[in-house]
Length: 454
Image (cartoon, rainbow, N blue to C red; front, side):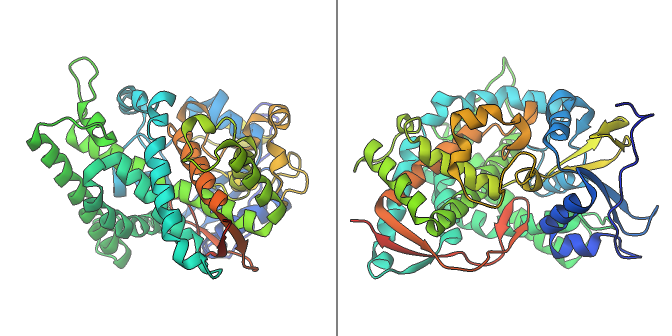
């Protein structure tokens, strides 16, 4: 379809002065689902007064996602307000950089994410998972209840900080725990505000964000300076970044810090969300949980899981993928169009801010039967092969897909192998409301009863 034959994009009705801003702030993801049901696969949201506020084009179909992230990806850039806010709070790392900067950074960082290199972290992942399982013993003896999101955030943060910083992990861990939630909340509030104010302006949100940023940057910079002063090369992720060379070039200390912070964000927040909702869903479906446990015991037994086990833990991986379908850690992805284009028969102008929503695409009734049902069998190899490539893309897709997706999947499968083998999970009834910061997060604690299985 061409621009001359395409139809205008329908605008979602909103309030007279603020447009869709109140609905988006009240429940961002439900507003998207409702817009899809009522207006179709491509819609436009008005934020603020027409001509004075902003417009966002939202995309809810795999084919349009393919056009944006795959086939015509160079026409859709990360120049959006959302990525600008992430860039302002954690720096211009691989997640947000573009053009020659992105190409240069990827050249340095790609060798650190080969399958062989990532698999070498499995021992640390298993050790931290086993440590958490041991900590749970006292709580679990009498069928205690845990906030599983708190526990999974603690676990994945320990894993990533240990892999990143090695013996310096304990110094930076408390700073990361306090800073990241503040920076994430700031980024999403600022990204969807109808009026943009510089981060330097002393609003309450900005002051909190700048304090958290100063603490986080300071902790990383101190460790980097100490590494230089020691003159000792270390085999943790930070040591490899500092040692990385491309000919005579190396990453500056600021670039090293920016890559570290992107990895901290992507390596613990996204994975903690995936694990939280996998365990919650298993706790609501005891027959699926038992099948996962039986597979883990058959493959792993009583030893610590390894990277080699991941291929054999196929049903465990299917359950994880299905949880990530229902609760994708990155429920929305942003781009800015550089050309006039047609998405699913709708006109999207050059310069438009586009939000592609895996949260909605993962529930699209044309691609998922009974989409609200938890069913790991959706991810058998045969059904995955038959499905549209962009019907499930929790790690993004195309050339800008998440470089750490194997890391995240390995981290998650190893954690599940340790925890589901040793504990029986029972989720307490009731809905768990969620919200979007930089990643998806539950708004409230996620209670689960645990009992040792032996």
